[in-house]
Image (cartoon, rainbow, N blue to C red):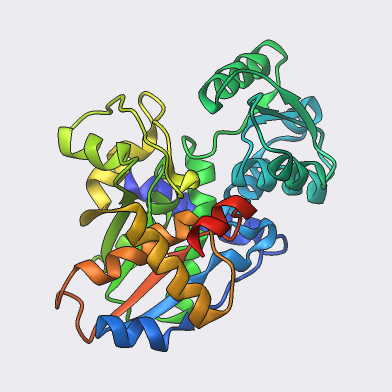
Length: 319
């Protein structure tokens, strides 16, 4: 998948999804700026509808489908932000859909999917099993499966954050973005590197689950175990052959991993100074600000605060 193709997908997404998603604020952070000796700006996707950037890709994918495809229905698998996003997109566009979740999915997460009226079915003991089954179900029933990241149209939707960043602060020097499957960082960086190649893209992962980071180092997609992390939105493995792997290899300038305590420290500082809820994956992008020394001193940097969806138990452990 060429960068130019994703760039074009972003441009198409920008016109497709505008009436369905929020253009989120880019907020200057006095506290983080002082602490890091940089101009730090927060791109507040925690204030996006459903509390996550994921709505952008879900809406873009569904909007790109033909009338015939839509009439046969949509299938996805996720008990988290992607599931909530697809659920809301289906409701907004009046489309029939089905969301598979693993047996262990919490009622809190299922509630955020169910509130928009999507049909939920349980399958498997973990997210991977649910996704494998959902893909098979979609193929057998001639329905369209929506991947959370392994799809150029979904990646293009996430890249509209980059379009907004350039409207809001054109002379950015660097952007910090958390990485799970790589859809968010691939979309944003494909757009930004196409319009301003000198912008540095920093990929951020928790030490306990850094599959993309280690895969890029190895030059191939690895199957690695993930330890428990407060950043459940970035945890887990990668699809074999995912399009985001080559995009990350080409577009991401540097990678950094952060500990659970570093993630929690950054979340506490953000919530205290910005008076807003964020989830662990957002803390993953915030924590590396404190680990680069003078590299970004007096430069303008943005952090993608990717979501706000955190369980009461996880929030308790942070606070």
